[in-house]
Amino acid sequence: MSSKYALGYSEREIKRLHFQSSIIEPITIRMLRSCGISRGQNVLDIGSGTGCVSRLASIMVGSTGSVTGIEQSCSAINIANRDKKDNISYICGKFEEVAFNKKFDVVVGRAVLLFQDKIHLFLEKAANLVKPGGYLAFHEIDDSRQFHSYPPVGLWDRTMAELLIRLKKVCPQYDISRRFVKVFDEVGISIPNITYEIPVAGGRAEKLCFWAVETLCSLSENPESILFSDGFKTNSKSLLYSLQNEIYKNKSQVEFLGQSCAWVKIK
Image 1 (cartoon, helix red, strand yellow):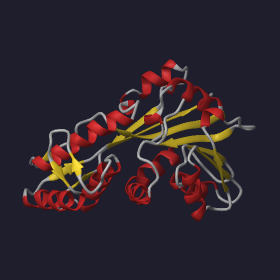
Image 2 (cartoon, rainbow, N blue to C red; image 1 turned 120 degrees about the horizontal axis):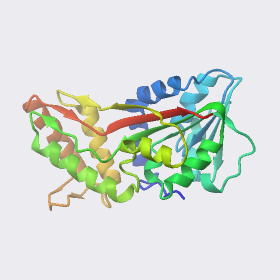
Image 3 (tube, rainbow, N blue to C red; image 1 turned 180 degrees about the vertical axis):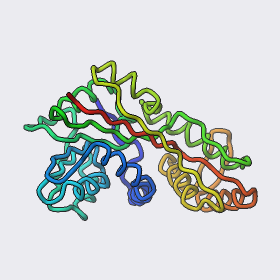
Image 4 (cartoon, helix red, strand yellow; image 1 turned 180 degrees about the horizontal axis):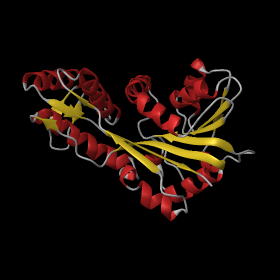
């Protein structure tokens, strides 16, 4: 039902994930708060990875609540356990194959729907694990929208176009953030609340440039020799330096991958 996490869990990718989480964490927190998550509740984090969302939820539910993370990569769980709170437990296994013996106040996932081959079955099971009156919530990255620079920075736009090409190849539901309403309706879930935010930066845009280049590296066979689809060849250090300088020189502001959240109360 679910695809293996396409970017893997190398040390470099783990650092990239943590860096990415530091940028989008406020968006996830706002979504969790919109679900009314509070002390004493029980939360299920699907595709918990290295535990970034689980740790956020654990703070919100406090010592009287609990967070269960389900993740198919045992190596990712080993990393998550390095900073595991007392009210968090992790299950190593595929979400579709694990039988849960209880329902949860909130079922959440971040960047998980993107990778589902059979998204309808995935959503049905997730919704069925929510207590009546509880919430189902997903924070997804929009891999369908071409993001731009203003005034235009050719290398940024070229790099972003390449990134989208690669993400679409490894994400079966790369455009899920644009289909929340339709897909939820197809599985009998009410129309969700939806937000959409676009990270934007100017100056040298250090954080967005680093995020973009490291994501491209994780999608490359050889991160130190990146070959674009149009034949352009570069490496991570050179690309990062050139992007930052061109953005600064052109006094541009640049957009990165849109962040879309959808949450709904389950009756």
